[in-house]
Each structure stands twice: as structure tokens, then as C-alpha cells.
Amino acid sequence: MGSVSSRLLGVLDAFTGAQRRLTLTEISRRTGLPMGTAHRLVGELVAWGALERDDRGRYQIGLRLWEVAALAPRGPGLREIALPFLEDLYEATHQHVQLAVLDGLDVVYVERISARGAVGVRSRVGGRWPAHTTGVGLVLLAHAPPPIQEDYLGTPLAGFTELTITDPAALRRVLAEVRRTGYAVSDRQVTMDAVSVAAPVRNVGGAVVAALSVVVGTDGPPPSALVPAVVTAARGISRSMFRYPEVP
Amino acid sequence: MGSVSSRLLGVLDAFTGAQRRLTLTEISRRTGLPMGTAHRLVGELVAWGALERDDRGRYQIGLRLWEVAALAPRGPGLREIALPFLEDLYEATHQHVQLAVLDGLDVVYVERISARGAVGVRSRVGGRWPAHTTGVGLVLLAHAPPPIQEDYLGTPLAGFTELTITDPAALRRVLAEVRRTGYAVSDRQVTMDAVSVAAPVRNVGGAVVAALSVVVGTDGPPPSALVPAVVTAARGISRSMFRYPEVP
Image (spheres, each protein chain N blue to C red):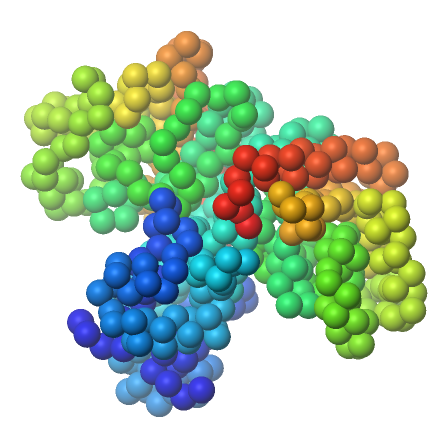
């Protein structure tokens, strides 16, 4: 689409986790827009507050956009309901606690609580990650509608470590096991020092709409010891969804 | 402005904390756009992912907008740095812990960690509140550039309880006291059952860029007992800003 709307929204796409601040020249280069057009669109985004300028004159995503985005039911809405249970799980484990949803074929992290001394993780809140490599992703894939599962199994499966499951038949078996047991363990699939344990969060209708996980180092507690806590917290969130039929 | 860009962004303004889901008719009414125009703009916002439809066909803010907004340095960027310290303060107090910035003449809440049994608060993450009625707001106002302070003191001061400071001269004295002591106490200014204690967060250059607070019930610990913990955590965040010169 070459409409004004799509070009305006395309300017926002130029910003990434690695490049949170851009000059007008960089925006023009990344979007493929002529400088004059980029200048005009950026001006309109600044006027509304979707972009703001830092003290060196570069552009960054503005606080106003974040305020509006905080109204998204599937992100912050879900987060509001889940947060007390994430707190409980964090206090019980003192490990990374994560909440994620499935968007297309990716996992999107909606919230993470991190201890300062916990194992390093590569995801960030608002970031995407290939579903098959993470505990939350395995849970969400296992309960996704069959056509989405088949789409996923039909695409090449990215590998990050020697243990990452990249064989579709093996992944299919893992997903069946996740449905059977009610939780998922992702063992050194992204880095060789981290394991995650995840469980499903269900909405009022019983559909799995999110997944909750704890990420521990391989030198930490055994994953099996974390399963009851993760499942308990995930069920607590699911139960609270009854009180908020609006979400998600 | 009547440009396509401003009308497109105006559609996003139709969504509020009280109305997170809207029909096309409601969007048309709230924005003043003809149904045909609203339909076309909403279609472009859905195509990009800024809006999505719920299972009843109503529109809501989409996950994609929230992903982009998660790149905002003044919101989530600041939050990432501050979160471990907010966790520490929460574990030490088990009360509401809040992080806020000043935007125009309002306080915007960037993060809140809440205990389930803690006193009720009326703010929400991503929400705005009049600065003079909150601990974080008093800290941010006290350290705002003088023209912003004068603007604020020149506008009518909203009252919520019989104790809310609505006299500009009294507020001016409170702000001077906040600068002198290094913290603020907001005593039953929003509701008669809540008190907050707040301290400033400074960037690398020493400018106050955020404020941290604990909110307790009037039947909870005395505010004076919380001051050292809040000041300590706020200084911890300020110290960490040196490691992230990019924010805010």
C-alpha cells in the first residue's frame, strides 16, 4: 500500500529494539521515503505525540503512543490481571517470570519480572521470539487452532543451540505431550544455560490465551520442582479472568 | 489539522481506559468522522496492527501498536532500568510501588507493582493524574523547570478530598519543602485512606526525570518509616542510569 496512512505507520516500523533513536536521514533511508515526505510525516507524528525528540534532536517513540498502547487488551489488559500472580511466583522462586501471548507464529512477551542475579534471557517485554524454542511458545502452540499448528510445522524451524528441536515430527510429539501433561519444559533451546517451565492461561471460555513461565539457569533448581508453582499461578490467573470478561 | 495523518491518529484517541472497545459507529461519533472515512481509516489501522477486532467484531488497540510503543525510552525504557529496584522496594514493603514521569502538567504512571491486599489506588499504568495530588507529582513538579512550575501554579488546582492542597501559595511552600528534604509525602490528597511517599530519580546529568513512590493505607506503616527505603531505591535507579546513557 502506498497510502498516506501506510506510509505514516511505516515510519513507526523504522524503530527497533536495537535502534530506538533515529535521525531524519535514518528514517528516510529505512522507510525508503524521500526526505521531504519523511520530514512531513515525522512532523505529524511529533505533533500528535507518537514520536518525540531527544536532547540531541533524534526521534524516538513518544510517551503518548505508549499511553494509547497501554489500552491494548491483549497486552497491558492481560498484564493487569496477571501481575499479582506473577509477583507471587516471583517471590516463591526469585527467578525470571514471564507472561506471553501468540501473535501469528511468534511469541510476544507481555510482561517479565526479573531478579538481578537470575540467568540471562534474550527476550524483552514487547519483543517477539520463535514459539518452538520457548516454554511459553510450546504451550501456546500446543493449544493453538490446528491450522496454526500446521502452518508452524510447515515452516523451517530455527535452531539456536545443538538441542533446539528443529525436526517437525519431534516438535509434533512435544506438543502432544504438552497437551497431555498440562505444562511445557523448554530445555536449553535458546541458550545452553537456561531452561523454562510454562503453563497455560485460559479465558472464561476455556481457550488458552496466554502462557506463564519461569526461566532458570541449568545450575538452578530442577525444572520438575517448578512445575507445581507455575501451574498454580497460571490457574490463578485463569480463574481471575472470570472477573474480567472484557479481557482479552 | 484536517490531514489524513491527523485523522488517522485521531481514531486512536477515541479509545480510553473506560472504553477499550468500540464499534465503528462509536468511532465515527467520537471522532466526528463520516462513517465511510472512519471505515477506511480503521481498515488501514487494522491492516498495520494498530487496531484489532475482538470476537464480537468491536475494535480494540492492537498488540502491534503495543510492541512499537514498548520502544519508548521515557516509558518502557526507563521501566527496564528501574524494575529490579521496584521489585526490591516491593519485597521490603509489600505495598504499591509506582514509577512516574511528568508529561505536560500531568503525572503519567510508567509502572506499578501492587500487592493484592494493599490499599486501593485510582491510577493505572499508562494513566494520567494531576501532579499536585500525588507524591510522585510533587517530586516531579518541585524539580520541574521554573516556567512549568509557574504554569502549574497558575491553573486551577483540582481537589479530591477535604485535604487536597488547592491553594497555589500552599503548594509553592510544599514544593520548596520537597526540594529541601529530598522526598515528598502526599497525605490523603486523592482518597481519605491513602498516603504516598516519593523520591526523585535523576539521569546522568543530575536532572530529575522520574519519581518513585510507595502508597500505603492510613492504617499502614507511618510514612516517615518508608522514607529511607523509597529514597534508597530511587538513588539505586539513578545510579543505574549511568549504565544506560541512552535513557531517557
